[in-house]
Length: 221
Length: 230
Image (cartoon, rainbow over all chains, first blue to last red):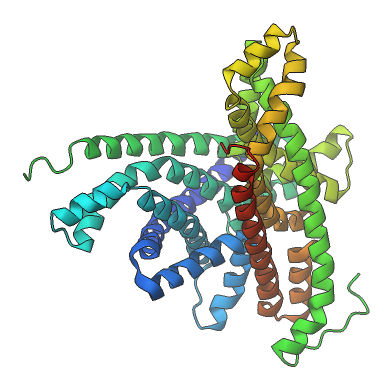
């Protein structure tokens, strides 16, 4: 059988993989900012909560989390379809790593900036949103780029909870045709192509962020 | 191997204690797989890093593409590739070795970047001194550059070891019975999933917390011993 015959089925899988990866990144980045900011600005209790979140999701292996939530969520009455579970777990995992990125970038903003904000009578929220975050976001971009590729790669694990992503499609075709070499080669190339595409997108966003940061709110003043 | 074992699922506590011995056997397999994979990654990563710095364009470019490819494709698919494709070419490895090889290949791509950073951080003068002493390129790497590069990249390598430990459950899909594979197997017999999976998760959490604390101490200890960190 010619390997081009596999492409339509692999394409369907690739679409699912892309959907899961992009949704997981979107929610993951939101979680990352919420918990990363809480780590720095959350006060004694909320910063501990954020610390627990990052340690648990960074420390317990995505593989375990995926199966745990797949079996645990229905027990507490939350039955999602597998795709939603997959997206949520991947997002929580990426959020854990992302929160560390956000925390690191926020704490790398220089002390003088904080002092200047204080001298200008900015309150804490204004300092965070007008001074720290705009500078920190630029620092975060390369790390978030890596996290995006990591998430794409890890999304292959959702095939194990019966989601028909690219890896799952490859597995099902192999089980029928036993033509391992061409199927897995094509699948690896597909993942590589998707990684390269995501890298280009991340670069474009990075450039936009940098440009936006070069003239911070000049129009207002 | 599970025949003859009885699990007491009356309460979560009795269930947990009755499966603990098997989970701990799985833990040893997990650690062995990570150790084997890490050994491969350390050696192969250095090879990749040196080939990447080769003065012959064809070699350095090919290495760059291979490393990039290994780094940007999922471990799971690479593992399937090795597990199903190698036998087609007459190479039949035990599942454990295939798994360790897959882990090692993926992480060699990461460690090669770490080596590269470490090698580039060795001051230019060291190279010039080696040239002045009439050392060959090979000797310079072996006796001057790599010995200076390795200590300062230890913390970064340690981080990858921790990451690798957390990825070993993937090996269970090619029949390696490490911790997660055993937990899944027990769950499928008892239809009680949460206790075994929670135990495995907690063991991983404990492992990573201990390793991170050790790495943190290493990071503090190295500069005191006169080794600058990258």
